[in-house]
Amino acid sequence: MSHNEAWLLLDVAVQLAVQDLPADAPPLAPVPDGRYLVGGAPTGAWAGAAHQVAVYEAAAWAFVQPSAGWHADVLSNGASLRF
Image 1 (cartoon, helix red, strand yellow):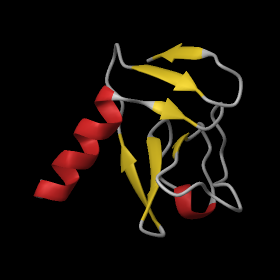
Image 2 (cartoon, helix red, strand yellow):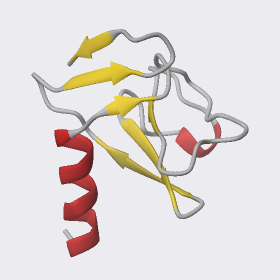
Image 3 (tube, helix red, strand yellow):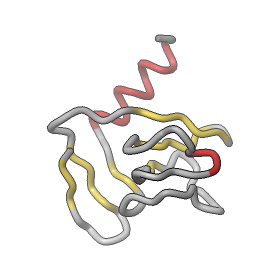
Image 4 (cartoon, helix red, strand yellow):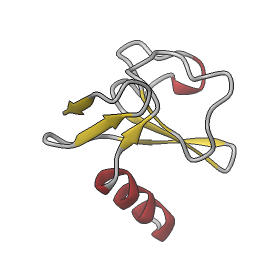
């Protein structure tokens, strides 16, 4: 794991706030540094990343596998999710 990957994992794990509920397709206009929950049947740039957290950073997607017990605040509706 590179130094940058370690920082990304730490940032996602400690302060996880996602844009919306899980989706299978990436948004057409992702928020810079936005976090998204990938659904169970992902398509497009998210193919192969089912049930992961997608992070849009530097105009590219990175994926993090959440661990049991992680919390995520959903920015679109104020909900709180737990893995």
